[in-house]
Image (tube, rainbow, N blue to C red; front, side, top):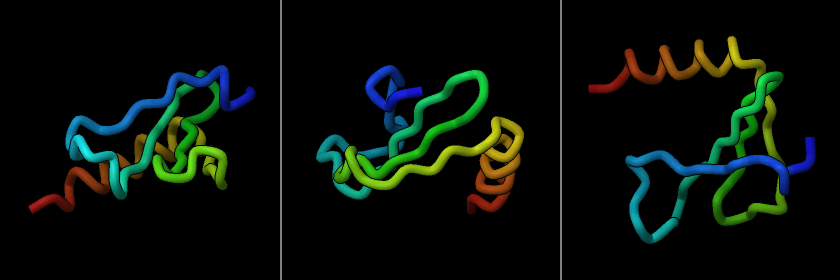
Length: 63
């Protein structure tokens, strides 16, 4: 899937300045992740199950 066809969004926890944020876009086969400052740069694509495990881990580790 081309990156132009993806619906990218930032976390609601991101600041309004847009600095140091990641953006994610979901499609049925993968969760895509990119740096908001370098939209044409490298990207990660994770299986939805891997993304779910990461979010569960990150949420559990919050203080």
